[in-house]
Image (tube, rainbow over all chains, first blue to last red):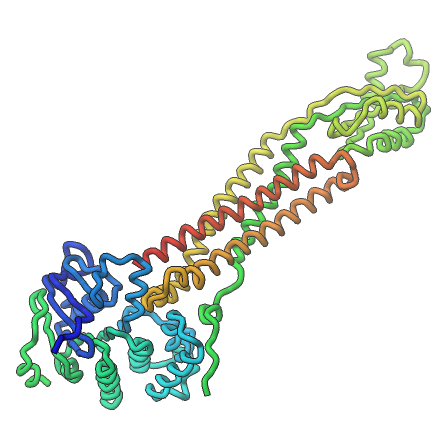
Length: 233
Length: 278
């Protein structure tokens, strides 16, 4: 059977805060549609920086990043905008419209991508129900708890059914039941064909998503020992 | 039930105007009529008129006649020469006539601008009212007031500089407030033209509107103050040219303020957008 073209292909990629200061080097990684990849590593190892690079919020310091077969460094602003429309970002550095309601925050990616209003309303209603926050849909986002905001952040990343979902510590600050809900959402998205990359400092949390796990070790990204992870989990 | 989505303007809590930009534009444009007026006064010559009349001629009639004959001038300063000076002058010039009676009336007048007055007509009109009056008319250069001009020009230049600096700060403040929206728009894949339509143009429009509104108010206040101080000016036919100059200068100042604010706003916003889309 012919393998699907990877959504993400990294070859010899280096990422870091500034040129000459790489946190990760020589990263080779393929993420196929419908697969879940968990990146684990200690705090400060470069997980979030890697996710930001994958989310086109930071350029790689070296190497090639192909998103959906297209080298991201070769595209202009218009082309980057087109690629970004295929991304779902649940990253902590992505801001909120704090004074706007939960509903409006969820709708923003759809509004930006010119979805028809009726479809936007329907998708937002579906996600508000999924969140279980129907009674607080019109509450300003600043009035939600940190955990609720994290959950809304994941929903906001998923509303457009992206080709690539990037989630940084998606299970942090969540209770058991809510965490299970998040895992289910991520797995459902993967079943629908989205590629998913999650990052977590906790290998056990990362393992809950059930995909392949990669570990950052000594500035390199390597496939993790599955057996060891199962023991930790 | 599905609730209505709020328009972006409400989500971003935009205010329609930037008040400090309006205020500064008003100051800049309001100063222009005063500057131009002062310049006109310095450039256009005045007439010095001296009127002598017999001591028995009614002084108030002489003054009234001079005013009536000078109605075309914007500024008419009539000063009766003081009695002591008049007496000294009389005795110095015609000592032998001192005993023949009181010295004649003397009026010194400055009429501005000279272009508004026909000297012969003035002389004829005054003499028609007071037949024995002797009227001397000569050119007079309006004393320059360099101190005031320098102060006004400095104020104008300072205000324009302040307008630019404040524009920069106002744009940065607004951008800081809308920075989250811009980041989100870029991250969610908004096309550059969509960002332009949703974030850039409203901001530019707001700043331009603020400067235009402020400039118009400033221009109106400046012109009204001038016309209040020179009440006859609006009714005087020759004034078409100076008032046209004032109006043109004011329009140019208004345009300049708007263009400067627009240029600075566009530069700053585009720079920020480019960095977000990189």
